[in-house]
Image 1 (cartoon, rainbow, N blue to C red):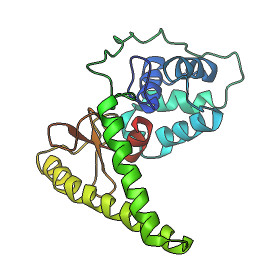
Image 2 (image 1 turned 30 degrees about the vertical axis):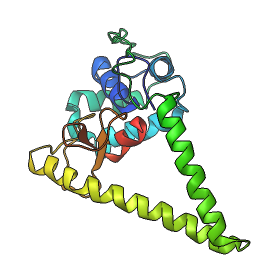
Image 3 (image 1 turned 180 degrees about the vertical axis):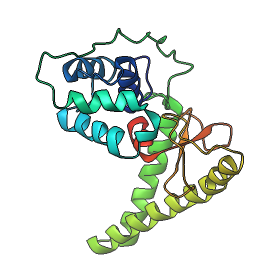
Length: 212
């Protein structure tokens, strides 16, 4: 999910908000910022409860000071209208231009034409091979899909290892340190381009899902 400006992920926004508030988070003010930067988000109170718990007791604890966590812990026991902080708006980033926007252009005529032609050809071949056997058609669809997926994994695996060996040991979005390469995910910085070491970075699963 892409931000309109300023933040790459909701996690980055939440972390910045907590830091700016010194832990005295007003949920409504936080929600307002989430809606502003991520208008398509399904953000709700349970999402904030998860972040708060992870900051106080879980995987994000080390990224916040004791004072911030103490204020956040007390905030959960304060009555509404207490001493809360509504931080100033974060500085807006420049909107992405066509040259820097993530992902391929949705209406690229050449890719659309070639891709549709290839897909129609594959569908025709599968249909001819399967005939009226729906079970065979399902298995052929899955086989082709799984083989293409494996081809991509073979490309991604050495790039991921190269970045890890080169010292990329933290999430490039939220800066969370990685304990091992297991569970670390490869992300293309420019999704209109393929998997190369220069175009890829390592992210934690949460950030990758938000950017995906």
